[in-house]
Every structure is written in C-alpha cells, then in structure tokens.
Length: 226
Image (cartoon, rainbow, N blue to C red; front, side, top):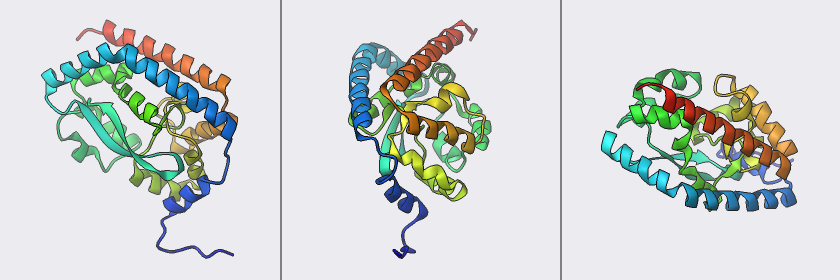
C-alpha cells in the first residue's frame, strides 16, 4: 500500500486522483474544439458591448474595470478568473472569508447599480470567454471555486474531487436547473451528471438553454425602472 504523505493536503491528493479517473479523451477533444470556436466568435461579436461596459464601469465607479480571482481548474491547477467588476471598491476584502448562502446574504449591499444589471444579465461573466480561449475554462462545466473553499468542500464532501476531471465552466447543469439556493451537495450531483454524460449534444443543449436564460434576464433587467 502506498503511504500518504502528511505534508500533502487533501485537495492535492484529490487533484492527483482527477488525473486518472473518469477521463474521456475523444469527447473532451471535441468539446475543446467547440469551446475555442464559440469563445473566439463570441469575443469578436461582443467586443463593442464589452468596451461600452468597461467604459461605464470606469465612469460610474472608477477603476479597476475587471475583477480577478484565483480559482481551481482542471486537475487542481489554479488559474486567474476574470469578470467585469460589479462590487464596490474593497468589497473583496470584506467578503473574501464567506461563501455559500452567507456570501449571498452579504453581497447585495456591496453591488453597484450598474453591477446589479450586469449580474442579472450575466454580462459580468463575459471576460471569462478569454479564460475559455486560454484553456482555463470551458463553456460548459462545474462553476469554478476558490482554492480555500475547495479544500473545505473536499473535507465535507469526499466526491467533490470529481469536479476536477473537467474544466470549470461558464455555465452548466446546476446553473440551468437549480440556481444558487440549493446545497453544495445538490449542485455537485448535477455537476457529476454532466461529467458522466458529457457529449457534444448535451453541451449544445446547455449552451442554448443558457443563451435563452441570459437573453430573458437581460430584457427583464432593462424593463425594470431605475
């Protein structure tokens, strides 16, 4: 039996497990090709809108325009995720220790007026298309999580490591089906269903469902009085 090095964290051991389990190379190559095509085309088409959003953030709440945060990616590799900034200056230091429902309760008071619309329409996620193009993320997959919280969730939910088999995504089963309220265990069940059944057809259905949801939420946000 191989001895477990006490200096290696639980998260690191699970990262090593992800290198050997649940791999589907052919499907993953096809999904990666779709990621590159969709991300590149979207970045080109959305560039004018992204510029308008960046200018609006700068004018209404100052720099920085982007939020950058460390997230755990495929096989446990940590990468820098990008989003349009939606929170007030210094909010990260005030909210950084919280996650889950406690974070959901504390966040609304930190969101800027423009940030509320960006979040409602999910346009704050647009810069993550660059993460997709770089290979940090996929269009479809489990949502990326902060390294600290990943360690804690590995201790609470032993199966949590299986999320590391695929790249984290802009959207996924959990986001199209259940939103933010359910427990981490419930969200994981949907993520694992994607990992087990992932295919080109399922990928395209999730992308279509997400596009429709984003369009609907954007129109709803524009219709609300300021």
